[in-house]
Amino acid sequence: MSNMNELLMPKLGLTMTEGTLAEWSISPGDSVRPGDIMFVVETDKVATEVTAEAEGELREILVQEGETVPVGTVVGYWTGPGQSPRDSDEPVQESNDEKGNDDRQESQATPSSSMPESLSSSEEPSSRRVIATPLARRLAREHGVDLEQVHPSGGTVRVKANDIRAAVHQQQSKLSHPESVETQSLEPRESQSIPASAHLQAMARRMVESKQQVPHFYLAAEAEITELLTLRNVLNQQEGYEKLSLNHLVVAAVVRALERSPEQNRIFINNSIVEFEHIDVGMAVSTERGLFAPVLKHMEGMALDDIANKARALQDRVQTNSLSHDDMHGGAITVSNGGMFNVSYMTPIINSPQSAILGVGSIRELFRPDAQGQPALRREIGLVLAADHRLHDGAGALAFLNRIVDALQQPYQLLRPRVAARRG
Image 1 (cartoon, one colour):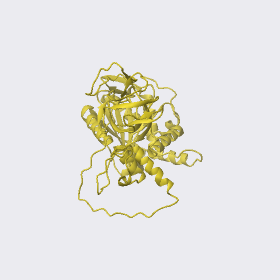
Image 2 (image 1 turned 90 degrees about the vertical axis):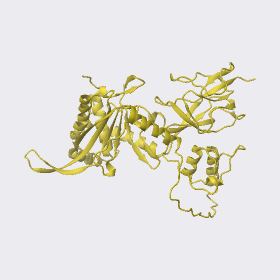
Image 3 (image 1 turned 180 degrees about the vertical axis):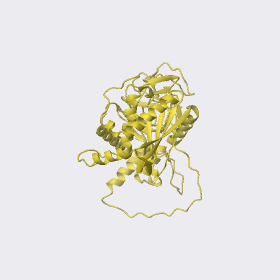
């Protein structure tokens, strides 16, 4: 009998402690080759297809679809070669099934492409209940596939993602011979109960944990950005460069402030302080699928145009569902710009394990006295810095916020990045 090796719930990021097994793409007895999808893991950030590293056969499933288990949990057994369990220090936790079989070795499949998950798992009203995996339902919504018209494969009653992909392929092959489709009218409902997706449940847990476990304190300030907007207009008139948005300039100001305040570029995790060598800044992006906070990496010493290009590329990956796990992890601070929603101030929740988040309000026009005491029209934005009091005291956070304000109010320093951060 071939040795049976353990398939583990992989650790897909620094802060991942658990994952939801959204879908098994194969059944016991199925053989796989390198690169074949074995199962799909959902976290609060993305859904990831986990692929086989070698040839093998799935022998047993221990964790069922929809179950959420800690990192390192044995989710099943297969006949592929054994490997080291994982790169992390997380303890392996086995399920309640039989343990200790000597010919079972630890193995871990490889995370493949990641797909950002929606913040909503609304299900279309149907005349019959369709059993489908969460990932299958999401793909069906994205491609406009009617779940009632999809027949499960593999002799099961559950529609899986592969069934949806097959249906999409079939639809595309029929584009040259369109058929009329009758539209069904749905009876209005006053209310309905919709189960929250694993993504939404995980996000809700993290927000509650962050608000309850991280001692937030808030500092507010205004930045006068009349000169900043003038500079932006001048730069945007030049052809051949990425158009600069106010958000690009705020991110650049945060980078410059971190270059001058390296003590702010750290987080508190597992009762330890982690100091980052590089400057990474999160950027909140709103989409129809929900809010995402991917991270701009290695921003130290970066020119303003490069920051804009990097931010645009990251935003494009959000919109096209092509974020990687690396895109969604890292950094000590996120910029959350609510200015497009006509808000003076916003006090956001820290995206744990980060240690700070900057809320940006709308541009306001108001009169302020000039140097001669005469009223002059100015343009300002409200800034609110939320900081983790386990790491940051009031004086240090105030100095950091003032450096952000200073960079925005003296915008020409944004054009001259610091080559190296100086401590002290």
